[in-house]
Length: 465
Image (cartoon, rainbow, N blue to C red; front, side, top):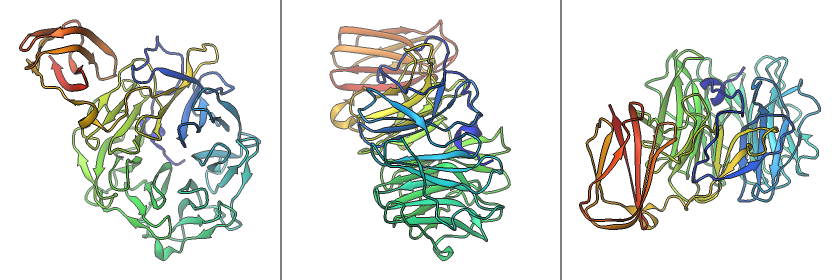
């Protein structure tokens, strides 16, 4: 079976009923996804606009069980309606989801029994019915065809991509909303290398012309003309070897700024690596040290910014975070005991995160909505706050001083899982006044100290030894 990010990580994904959940102060609105089964995990999430979000959920208590349930909101998450995509759970396995508007969405799939071939289905009535839109000659090879993705740049223009057949990736394109499809000539697609194939749900789009998809050989294919011609990134040429385990995920904030994850090593124990690009994926730079606040389940770009968001759902990685420097450093949004499986933003202040629902506990709704300040505007909205922090590393006592007096100071300390371990609000702080934070009862490790006052903010990492 093809690998996707979740299967490579071996994330927990076993239940939505965990210890007492503490929402992030920036993700305080819980949404009831209305999936019919207990503890549904939102494995695919596509936020179309501030009002429309499409989701597909699995069984949280049996994540490998095949499902065909979707859920949709057209009012920003106030309410969701759910339904089924296929007539049964034995024919197709969903490979990816692509929402167009409140009525229209697409899914790609492969055959469950044979683990080959596949189909693309569309709904135009909010999920009441789903129509097979697979072209006559599409994904017909019984030994090599495999449908990985379907992706639309506009309601009319889209592509679907499958594994190589006869030495060429199978890519089809439509310009009339899926009524007709034309196969892209092999001359317009770089040839796959030996043993290379595509991966389910490992794709990205940005604007009306840019598309990317990843392969098991840690290569990224890109089109800048809406799927008509393709190039392949040389990002990992020096590291491609028998240890390449596949691209985990791809995210772009705009046409040029992107990040991706790539795995190396044997299946089930592959090592995660993180990369960034500023030229649309033509070249990639390795981020050698992955920040512990990076969420390893999903990544997305934040539109209107050059920032990124990440979510974590595996054991020891229950968090949701953001990066303002191309993925080099990550800042946890806080909260604890919540598995954030998926995340997607439609603007710099509207985002959604998928988690687990629990039909026996209405407080565990299955999804969250971003409620924080607009993102990507640090220079104007959140000017840097000057402060001194010492010692670092520390034995548990951390001291802070500010060179200028401040009013309304807020101090928050979070651990690598995003759990708030210390918080304090102060009405007035004098210039040079020493503030002491006692973390001696916390475990040794890395913590994030965030201090804000009057539109200024600073975050520093401290090591407790």
